[in-house]
Structure formats: C-alpha cells, structure tokens
Image 1 (tube, rainbow, N blue to C red):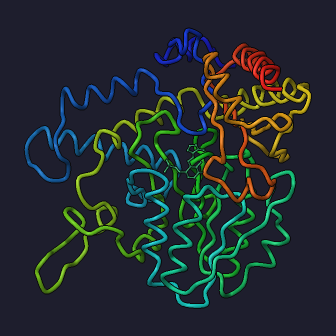
Image 2: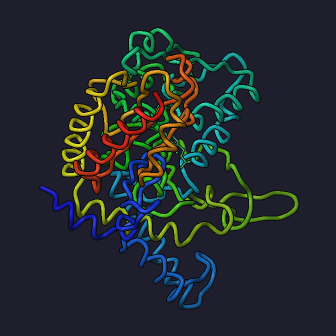
Length: 404
Ligand code: 7TS
C-alpha cells in the first residue's frame, strides 16, 4: 500500500495553484513531475561538483565522472542489461531512435523491409521513413484493431526474410495499450530481424528486463520517469551497438584522429560524442532510485486502481467515447465527448486547474484510424488520487454542459 499523501509531499509542484485552483496534473504521458530529491540533486551538482567528464584529472572532473558512471551502472541494474557499456546516454527517446535508424543504414539495402506498428508515436515512425528514403527499403505497418490492440496474425504475415528491423512501442502513448512485446521479439528473431522497443511510455509504469525480453534495443526518456528533460537511454545489445555507425562524430568518441583516418573509441563512448547532459545523466540515477524505493509493483497496482476508477466514472457521461480499450492497458484514458472538439474541453478545464493533453498526441495514424482529429488524454501517475479524478469528472461535466 502506498502512502499517497506522503508521496505527494515529495513533489513541490503538486501543491501549486493553477488559475486559482489546486493543480490536478493528468498530463503525465507528456512528462512527469519531479520529486524534491531530483530537484535537489540538480542543484547539488551545479553547486558542488560541476565539471566536464571523462576529460580532466582534476578533482571535480573525477567526481562528476564517477557520479555519471555510477548512474550508468544504476540504469544497467534497473533494466538488467548485461554490461554497463550497453547503456548509452542520449538526449531522449527521439534521439535514441534516430541513433539506431541512422546507425543501421549501412546494414539496410533497397528492397529490405522495416516494420513499425499502427500504434507508434511519430518519433518511432519518421526516423524509419527517413531510413527507407535513404536506402530504398520499404516501411510496413502492423495494423491495429478497434480496441487499439495490434493484430498479431497480420504481424506474423508481414514478417519475412526481407524484414531487417521491427520498431514497436511497449506501451502506446495515445491509447495506453500494453503491447505483447515478448511475442513480437521472439517472432522478429525467428526471421533474423532486429527489434527496437520504444519504452518511453512503459518505463514510468514498469521495470523492463532487457535480458529476459531479449530485445536488441530498448529506448526511453528520463523526463517521463521523474528525471530531468534532455536525457534518455539507448540500451542495445553489445553486438548491435558495436555494429552501429555513430550518429555523431566529435570529441570523446574517438580512439585516434588524424586527417587520414579516425578510429572510434570502445562502447559506450563511441556513441556518446561531445559533452553530454552531465547533470541529467547523474540525476536520472536519482530518479530511478526514487521510483524503485516506491516500487514498480506498488506503482502498477495503484495506477490500475486509478484507471479503473476513472474509467467507471467517465463512461457514465453521456456521449463520452473512450478510444483504446485494450485488455492490457496502462493508466491512460483517451476520449471525446459527442462532437465537441477536444481543444475546447481542454481549454475550459485548464481554467479549473486541470492539465490534460488534447490533440493527436504525435500519433496521427491512430487518429486517422478512428477518423477523429484528436482526443482528450488523461494520463495518471502514482502521485494522482481518486479525489483528483472526482474534480476532473466534475469539471468535465461542467465543460460539456457549457459547450453542448
Ligand atoms: N515514444 C513514445 C511512445 C512517446 O510517448 C514519446 C513522447 C516519444 C517516443 C518521444 O519522447 P521524447 O522524450 O523524445 O520526446 N510522448 C509524448 C506524449 O505522449 N505527449 O508528449 C510527449
């Protein structure tokens, strides 16, 4: 059992008023709020040991380097990677996917196939389209059904010896569907294809075990798991990361440089050119410690309760339709009410202190599937409460009556 009031006290922003009302923050799918330990760790870094890493012999540089590498090790343990050099710091999920889609180019030729799913965020579509444009490969799409689940029988049919890489999310940001990634990974491997899992929406809710999953790449963002913005992770199996062409060249990623030839450094440095987000990397470790103290099983159980409670209340509103009703679903509810534009509802409830996201959620193909311009999306975190859901539902009823 979680002590939610105690947890809420860890998050200074949650006691803010917005438009004169207590903040109800239901936009966790976009970014999570940050606990005081994370905010303090950022200040501590800049106040006490700010220095560039992997470079200087001086004390501060050593302290910063050690803290950065301790964090890498924490992330390795958290996702159960075999080696710490399989954990590459990036600026976020988008950067990590682009690193793979760009770095794998030399292994893709005209006529090869890249598989994504109908449930992807644009970040896991566009880099693959760009890869296909560069190489002459074809992009194929695993379709979804009305509930927002992937049609696995179609996936089976799409896979062939031409499939070189499959890129799918673990959890859909727009609908909350939890995809059967174990199955997707096993099947991809049967055809010799690599598979990248976009864990941006999964890592706030669960602890992935990359060795048990046996995925080739797993990517996520720090800012969605109580960490700072501008930092994320590319996990890759050692053999795959060794094969990837570096996305960026520059300082720190080399072994030797001359005008005739440059040789690359070993992992992880080969893929980490330039000065990284040092504070972000260090503090991502703090955020992961914080979440692990709360416990991912506790988080999942509680968020499921919030999801069930909110769903049962929302479906009582006349004309409300929920998009995404997968059997395995996380604490995201996407919906519309009658023909009212999601933006109008979002704007009115913002005046009542409630933060939700409205629009296509960077997942336009999902909106096209349902023939809608967008939805209202409420996404809950472990620090949200049933009382907040009540406030949200009351505000929604008010907004609908104003707009009908
Ligand atoms: N993949 C998924 C599944 C996502 O949900 C997001 C961000 C990204 C990739 C990109 O992550 P970034 O940190 O690199 O930007 N999703 C959302 C969202 O649902 N609302 O705002 C951002």
